[in-house]
Image (cartoon, rainbow, N blue to C red; front, side):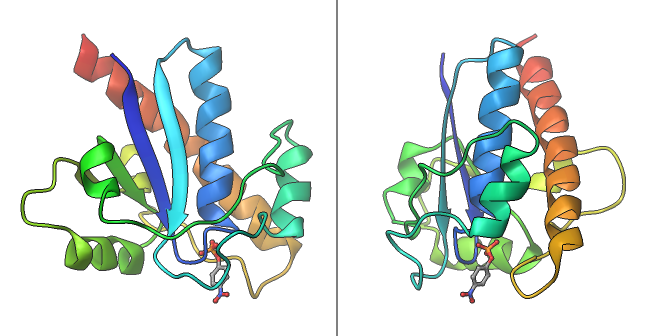
Length: 155
Ligand code: 4NP
């Protein structure tokens, strides 16, 4: 059965598009059946491609995210997806506030599936190039851990 995953950050132009691209690539390598999308809690960048700095940093790791377009979280997402995976605690609490009481998705912090104590993927938008590399490192660890979780669930 296909597992449906929605990554959620604030603007849907830096962290969640990168998470989408990374998990899609790793799921393909490991033969997982997944449907992956991403969205922002905010609507400022709706219709825009990801931040050019993230497109470039992801491309250097072999991940193409240039085709993605930003969208805002929609109420139907709480029923369409199995997992809503938040990048930071603020995204996580915004999702819990928006969530209909009869939602059918699990709302989790993405890095809670990763090895290590870091729980939040920091917003790289106002920082330098190093911030984007750090985010990609964290997202790779999150993706590995999340796929291990799906593997455990299906065992
Ligand atoms: P993201 O980064 O949440 O990782 O996409 C941000 C991008 C834009 C803004 C905030 C965060 N913004 O305020 O425009």
